Image 1 (cartoon, helix red, strand yellow):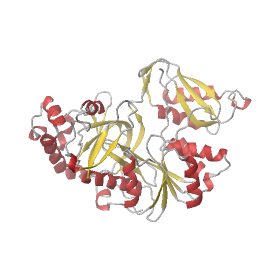
Image 2 (cartoon, one colour; image 1 turned 135 degrees about the horizontal axis):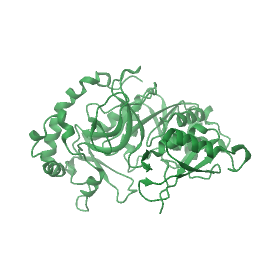
Image 3 (spheres, one colour; image 1 turned 90 degrees about the vertical axis):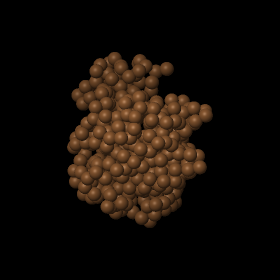
Image 4 (cartoon, one colour; image 1 turned 45 degrees about the vertical axis):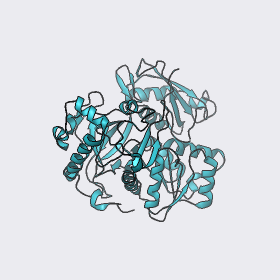
Length: 440
C-alpha cells in the first residue's frame, strides 16, 4: 500500500523538529491554560509560565512524567485524572486500561484526538504492505481497551474487516477457512499458540489464505527466532506494530523491509530517547538504545509531556526502500519487566529470543520463575523451558538444558537454572504472554 500521508511520511526527518516546534509551543501554552496537573508539576520544577519553558530544543530540561503520577491524580470525584483538559461535552470516547495493577485508568478522547489515533494507526498498519480491498481478520477486542481504536484504521484503509475478538480461537480458524482473509492481526504469542492449536487438530495454517500476519500488543514479533517460527507456521509474512495506550494506540509500524518499526506519529507526537537509569537524554542516532519518552503535540483531552513509556528500544536511522524517512525502532523489552541478575540487566524477551534459537527442540514457550520478589535476583535464575516432546526426560533431549544454559550465559551473561518441561505444560495466551511468574 502506498503511504497514507506521503508529504509527511516521506519528508526529510532532519526537518521534523522545525515542523514540530510551533505545535509544541502551542501545546505548552495549552497545558498552562487547562492542565492543573502540569501547572503544578512544571511550577514545582521552576517553570511558572509557557515562556519559562522555552522551545522544543529545551525539552530535555523539563521533568519526566510517570504513569504512577497519572494514577495518583485520579479519584472518585475526578476519575479521568487531574491531567484531563477536556470538558465532558467535548469527549467522544473513553477507553480504559485492563486494571491488572488495581483500578483501571481511563483515557478520554475528543473527536480530534480520536481522529489522530486513527490516522496514526492507519499509517502504522499501511506500512505492512496490506492493500485496499484485502480482507483482514482481527483478534483485538473493540470493547473497553485502546486496541479497539486501531480497528477503525482498517476502515480508513478501505479493507474488508472481519472482527473476531479475543478468546474465540475456533471462531477465528473457522473464519479463516470460510472467508479466506489475506491478513490477520493479533499478538505474537497468540499467533504462535494458534499454530500449535491448529496443528494439534490436523489444520495446516501455512496452507490457509493468510499471507500477512500483523502482530502487536507485546514485544516478540521482531525477534528473529520467533518471527521465523511464525512465518513458517503461518506460511505468511510477519510484521509488527507498537503503540502506547496513554499516547496513541499504534504509533510504530513495520514495512516489508522488516528493519524495524517506522514512527507513524509525525506531527502528533514528539519522540525522545533517555537512559532509563539516569533520565539523561540520548541522541536519536543509528544503533542508539534507551527508553522511549513521548510528548503530545496536539492532544486536547489528556495531553502528556515527556511521558515515560518504559519501552526499551534500539533505534535505526537512514533510508528505507519503502520511502518512509522516520526513525525505526525494535522493542527489546519493557524496563519495568527487567530483572537484574548480579548486576546484569535482563529483559525477559531477550531470554526468550535466545531460547527460541533451539527450535524445533523447544516449543518457544517459557516461564521465568524468580525466587525473590523485586527486580534484583541472585543467580542462578530459574527458567522453565518447554520441549517439543511429551517427556522432558526423553533420550532425544539429553543435554538440551545445559546447552540452553550455556547459550544464555554466552549471550546475556546471566547464569540460569534451566528446567525442561513437557510440551503443552506451560500456559498459553489468547492475548499477551506472561514471561515472568513472580513469587507470591
